[in-house]
Image (tube, rainbow, N blue to C red; front, side):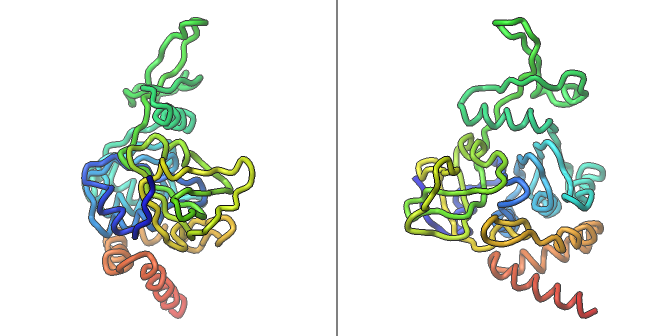
Length: 288
């Protein structure tokens, strides 16, 4: 059953060095606050899973938290490359990074298999693709009913899944809405689950067919207003496009990236202080 606790305690108790960690959220509700706390606590040797690793995974990889990345697309959305990811793959900085690449359909089916507690997912896909040559978790099987050759992907079962949502009630039931990715499947596939939320309410006041994650599938709920910044949370705040543009320059050079992480994450106590320091630094840069 879900417990309400500070984010720092949830990360300390539930994410361990060497764990497999999924942080999901598609275009919005990306769990940046939780990712920063992982960096702040200097977790190491993590296998990171994400359908679309973007800026938060660039930060985690550059900060030395990741040993392996399982993904289906990677980039700074609307801007370009993830420079810290590229540096890790191409130049092994800050250390070597193993990668396991999937298609979107393949990785989403792997999450569904994990959530369904079955060993693999099946899909029509990967025919003619080079990915099976480089990913031994993609195989081909024959349908026992039709004889058709289908792709099979090994189930994804994270040690911990982390997501951000709009609301939770005091029992730990979670409500999220808007553009969703595989948050539900990733959470159901995991052994432990951390959900950061904008607010705790007495009543979710959920409409029919809303996406509700019941308290019994959630391990920890942490109140972190603005916890998806710089992505957006529908109904609460917009995407900060300026941050994504600025990140391209910040992440290009190792020294500038390391200085940014030190000032904005390691030297701040929590995500609220990060936001304050970031506003101050943005104001200084605008004055120049």
